[in-house]
Image: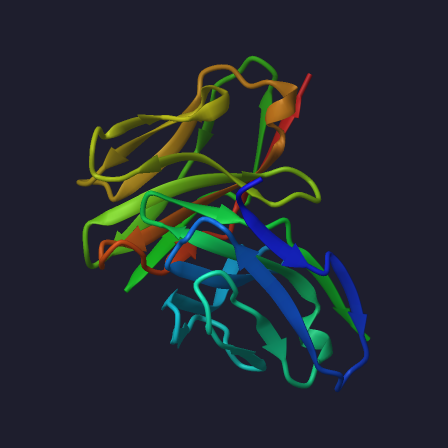
Length: 110
Length: 115
């Protein structure tokens, strides 16, 4: 089925560890983005991309890194995990006619 | 710059009553506006969208929203609430800069439906 695929669904990290959250879409969307969802704060934009090779920072970019080498993939890297990065992460792709979200990655940093 | 304000983090209605979830936006360009729903432990599902066509937009599950430029509002309504409508609802805005631009969310409104 067409859509946005995120992996893994769950992850526990120790403080200081690094990891990559994967996001792939098969709808040929130019726009992709990463959000984190925390209670009472809605979804906050971390990084976004408007095409392969083009990325920009969102509202809360510190501690995260992204790259966009293909239209399909937009991985999010945590360079040195901190407990403040415990959250649910969503990847989205789309356009002003609609955005599709992945099912999320629940990350716990201990 | 763009932003969204959702008034009321929690709204409780009786089954069969009117649902009204409020959303006000700020945008320096003509906005595209969206409502998303999130059921517990799930992702976000698009309810409806305003893309500069008709100001009254009908979505899925009986929801609709009206774009009012003079009030910078895009409130979500449903005439008769059902238990299955209990979820968290998010309003979002994106700007008309090409075919894709940043999507900014409000903080969400949790809808409770009681018998």
